[in-house]
Amino acid sequence: MDVVKVFTEEPIGLEALVPDTEPDARQRDAPGMSLEAFLSRPPEPYARAYIAGTFLGPPRRVGATALGDVDAWVRPLLDWAAARPWSVLEDGMVRSVLEDEASVVLASGSGHALAIGALEGADLVNAVSGEPEVGASQRRDRLPALRRVLEGGASVLFREPAFDGWDWSLFSTAPLRDDLVEAFRRHPSEARRIVAPFQRARGEHTFYLEQWTLDDLPEWAEEL
Image (cartoon, rainbow, N blue to C red; front, side):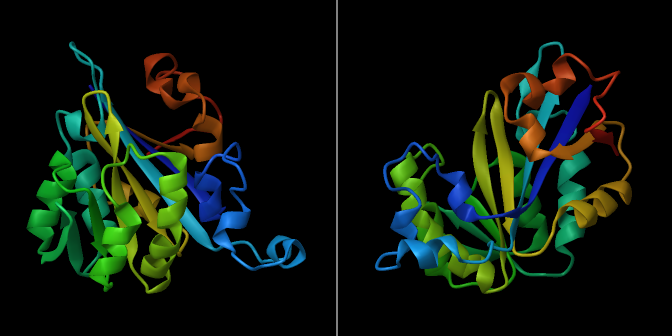
């Protein structure tokens, strides 16, 4: 059985993606800005969704790209993106792709990132800067470029390492949860598909809820 999980968080400041344990993490984004000005900034209007999957097997495989039916989440994502143009980042190069090729990249994790909408390719390169397994300081260094991509009107998908493949993180300036839920419901599937707040899935036990409570979901998890 395939299980798709969509964890959402909105609004979110991109600085929250970097651990507070990194020295001077909050100040690095604002060189020359006073502490008073930094603390009085309005919340950043970003949203993110994390798309994960597990094939319960046997044998069990963990990763959105490791499912038996990847269309259980790929088709809703393509629907959500509507007619906006796609770009893929592979080997440090950004190129435009049609929806069919974007579908293949999503299903396989063959690209580092995908952008939906118009963008400056250099900003997408700088927002990724290599594989996802970079250190905290490198993640922080990428945030200004990611902001430029998002504030230019594009949404961005980054691949994330999973045990047996890849998951995907989606970032946008617009709220994501309701529109994603509607897109998933327009594409029925035999997979079990769950949406939940990201904050409730930060621990390993709750992130892998399909392995212990799939038939008795907690109140904070909604099946689609």
